[in-house]
Length: 252
Image (cartoon, rainbow, N blue to C red; front, side, top):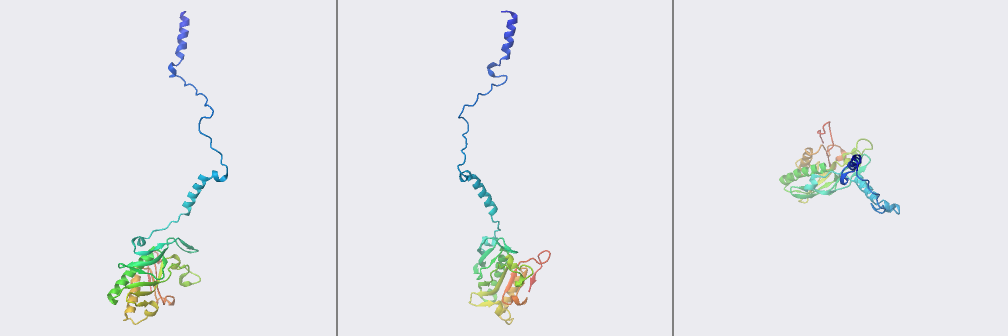
């Protein structure tokens, strides 16, 4: 074998990768038929093919239908006895988190509200604080205590003073409460209509005068028989905003 032949053989050998480790990897063989992911069957009808889509749609709809309301600390603590109702909406009236109140906790006792008013958390919390003061006064001066409170319905979609035009009443916003009488444990009923104009020295009149004054420290609006004829038979309490900073008060 000549020297030239040996050089050619050596050069050809150097071009062949050792054990396939160097150079370009070999191309893969074609995939045999029948291997790989199984084909997905076509839906036989619209219902069978929309199961997941329907679930997703229902989930999204549930989020859109969710009702966002505010919890009431007084209801959670037991200061107020009642239940949250669905939101109320009637034109310009409405209340996002209405509470149907059946009773309030006063000095360790449950005091029913006979009108079962629907109102907001702030108004009924203020009412419970007010009732605690009035109950303490009744115990000190009349030697008795509050048995129950006669109230109006609370929420009512109407304008102020039942007028045909003007501003929406705080009742239409669930932000007001009316008290027509205080029922005492000794069986007496002190009525705003019957007892407000009694002689000032009478215990019933004194209690109503104190109740009216105490409310002026808890609510931004307090209206009674001295305000106008519309309030001759009840006290009106609300937390409406008066003045630029909502701190002004009306007490009549």
